[in-house]
Length: 453
Image (cartoon, rainbow, N blue to C red; front, top):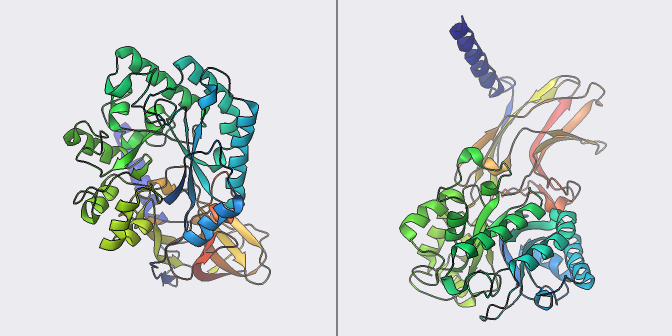
């Protein structure tokens, strides 16, 4: 009997899934969408502008907005130095300055790649562990209050530029004791504890995560579950500069497959730091950007490498494909629906980028009255973080219309809003198609109308 019930339940689930995938009726209309090659800003991906003295320089919201609207850049790096606080609490003036930087980013519609450090010198004059942990306690309220405009946080704090190599307190120049590893892990754990769980932390080399946490890559089933392994991504700040990217890799034969698997679900980004042809030329560059699912890249450094990509002809492709690039393929929709009844559709889309979004993001179907402009928002059971690069995904909206919904003609739209900035269209995802994006609303027009009776 138990076996029979299990088979019946399995059959019911299969039938339900089959029905959900079916068009509403033979009279449905299929719309085919035209892809666009245009480069445009999309949140939390692409080229970024670097600010290496974020503790001194003042972000200008107008300049940041120009990055987004004129250059297609939605990310800025903020390396915030705490040199004068190596043996003292962070001053209120410094915390206030940091808050102003976040405020400017929010006003401009961009997000911040955040890193803290104590020194730019190879003497490694950073702070001891206990001071770092105390500083993180001070930073916690600011990080929580501004997580909406923090794309992610690099581990930082340790060593010159916060890159964990030249350091007076955590094992210098690659000579790292067991105690040093314990102290490095304590800093990483503290960062994870004070930063909201919706945000990832990046480590400078694969060795750091493999040594402190796990040598096995994150499994698909554990992705996005808020645990430590699911929040620790990677950054490479000497991409292509040498056979091992200036020490980024210790054993590429092991670390390459590991990193390729990890970055399917974790944030990856960084910068180039020296021309090194042929390794730094387009064929290897685009291959590794794709293999390791790069989301962002410094547009300001190294100019020699970036200029070589322009000369070789791959820079436009790099600019478009960093992170995600969703393009609508087809949509099948009913021509009519009834108040209080269900509207069913199917929408196929492809991710032409090299990565998927890494932060939580919603999806919704919107019906907008063509006469009044009033719209109805229906949240969908979809997770854009699972729309992997190179793959085509079909979603099957099945929404119940309100019984008191006014009759009339409604335009169908698809929106992928920021979970924390739902009312800001500049933080919604734009699809890479012609004639679908509405900059004033953040909606993507599905080019179809439904008559509601």
